[in-house]
Figure 1 (cartoon, rainbow, N blue to C red):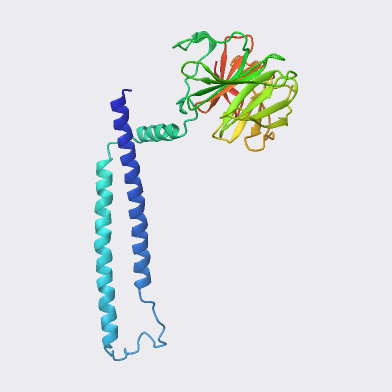
Figure 2 (tube, rainbow, N blue to C red; figure 1 turned 180 degrees about the vertical axis):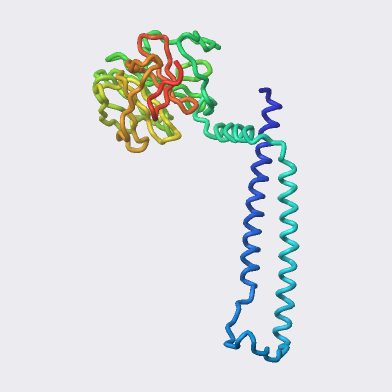
Length: 321
């Protein structure tokens, strides 16, 4: 879809939403008018006089006559307003009668998804089903030189900065890189006993996990100062990959097993049940390594395979690979 067409559709969608809002306001106004009319009706009073008895003489009270005239005048105003409301409703219906509601729903999804962008401009949109037999479905846009002594284990991105966690005992680092050039802005070493693994950005901080020591670290993303270290447990008692699910306020963690783990993004405590992941051929998805959250799905690369799994984290279903 070209940009002009997309902008046109967005404009139509916003106009439709505005019309819907106006229609709801008019409906509420009609309801208020109806309630007002009901309140204006006189209640029948039991006079105790049999229906066959002659009616008592009517005394014309000037105040009553004036009040009745006011009631009639108010009722006429209400009728006029109802007619105006009905005309506006008809105009709305005529203006948008040719809009396909499926298209409106799709456009609404697009607008919502664009507002829920997480990182690198990736919006939540449906991902087409695919299998390994479909072959390579990506294009390498550009390559950069990389420090061969840095054994990359995790990557995360925010606002032009790429955050890298590297591995190997005694050589593990956390680095801030310029995302456009991969120039190193800052690098710190982590203690020698730890093998760095996945890293995830969230709310100005970085959460890094380690391989076999069941220990994680939280850093200030601006200067890599250490804010916290914390213990964790997983199915294999290891840490492999971590990513942040902004829609559910949680981190998603892998440990090389067939399970995804979920941690509260404020407390770093495990929440909910661990989810077993199943590949398209019916096998359990073991050796899930680096994780990323993209278009509402968890992406997991498989260790020792040139394969990325597209996972529904709530069900464990691999939707593409």
